Length: 126
Figure 1 (tube, rainbow, N blue to C red):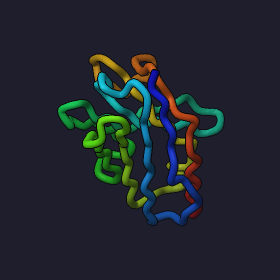
Figure 2 (figure 1 turned 60 degrees about the horizontal axis):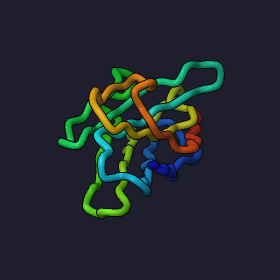
Figure 3 (figure 1 turned 135 degrees about the horizontal axis):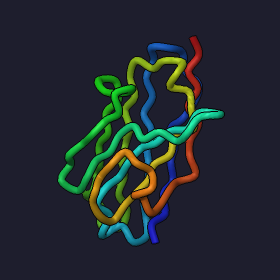
Figure 4 (figure 1 turned 180 degrees about the vertical axis):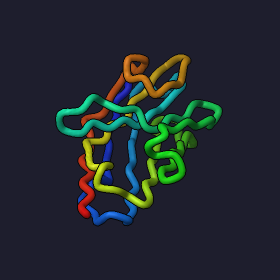
């Protein structure tokens, strides 16, 4: 079983940056894909970035060019995935979740993920 814990959320002004972290532990040896998702009040959960075991990344159009996902697999018992968010906008305000899947596809669709963190709140004011 994989355990995921997000951190790094907060309240910022539009145009500022944040870095979210997701620490994973437990049965991490066969994680294939890590993703970041977000959900704003009254809206569906949106996949925004993924990275697979070959460090191939993908992004939603809404964050392409502003957000960067990266992965650190150097520790055998814990690894981490990061989301660097630049040029933040008020519409980026949401609860942000990381997720893990053990098999392809590495996708922005939530149903393919097996494990989820508890989320970290990001609030961007204008």
